[in-house]
Image 1: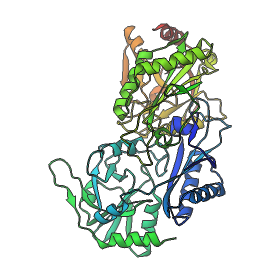
Image 2: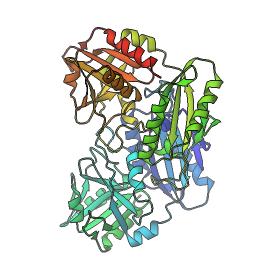
Image 3: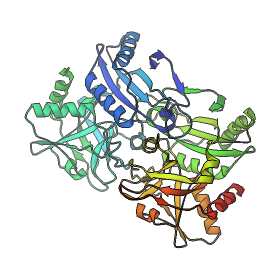
Image 4: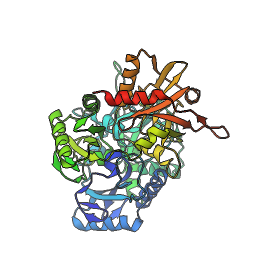
Length: 277
Length: 277
């Protein structure tokens, strides 16, 4: 089911700037028993994204009303709630119209069918050829300019890989095509800085919070792929899978893939996340 | 008037990947007396873009049929013909569906109302704070991930500027928000390389061709903003305005703007472009 500006609809105007210029933002949330996991955090990120892109944020109660309509529409206990905002309609050209009003598309989707499998078996990950550009004005945002992630994802079509790890154009590790990445080396945790590239995931922030609450050291910085390969433990996070362990990471040509045994910590972390309010 | 996959329509499905991920490409062309200026060149660029993004290109005769319908719909002698292609519909997620088929949105728009003024008075240009990221996998393409250009354009809302000049994150001159840039210094012409960033404009290619046919030296490379400020003559190109001279370029804080007198060469170049087939 899809709601456009609060009303059931399955289409948007061809003049919408979301279609023409990727001029928008989105949030992907998980609803369990009528309640959005980390709803405040998602709304805060959306608000910050709107501020940075100068897109007027809709009222939170409009988004909550969309959610209530989508919850009432079907009976599954858990589903994905996606909210997409665009700068709205305008004539041709990058310059927005002063009359534009934000388009809000709220939709309900099934959870990924392979979650149990990913949790049980872990993630088999390749390193994408497609790189992520560096641009602080867009870094961190969950905006709808996602060609880099699309090209990164296309690389694993017809392969056995569950996810692709993306490096920046400066060869630093950034994130998965649809997830953030963490690793543990010598008792400390590491995750890439997202000041220049990448999406600052809500689940990533929750993992950092949980680890720090547990007195663990979490380092946020600039890291090379070699540092991931030499880690004791690697895992990835996003809103639908929460956290899943990487069990195999593709190495370069003529090198053997790095393999990690399943570690109990990841299952504990996932349970802790699922239990958070 | 808008045609979606050849049929009159004013909307597209909310599951379209163009809306959700900016997963598409477009061409902006000018039609004069039923004929598209530089049609072959625009179609070639679209084809190349489709190849690089792995989006199936529609048949050229489908695009030509859209054009015929749009030409027949109204009586203005000249108008803008925009063709937008997206990877089509899919479920949620960056990974495309194998069943996706390209969405084609062809539309007719008025020419910009200020063309005569721009040709006569020249362009007053500021330097955008928003930077263009560097990523060779997307450079040159007229894709629909245009947030950088949107943010660059927003900077001139409520100002007297006609265009914004954009630098890369590495401080090199790339292009205008909606145009390419050229300048002449000491008898030679210069335009930025678009190997790492920017859109390879059809009009830019035509200007290079015209200048080289006229035995002029055109240098394509990496240049700083200082080189534009110290040029004898600066001009910008795009499909609707063809070519227009820059008469004033914003300098940094506490420095005076650089000003250029109108030069006959630009009007000659514009006439030559308008006369090309």
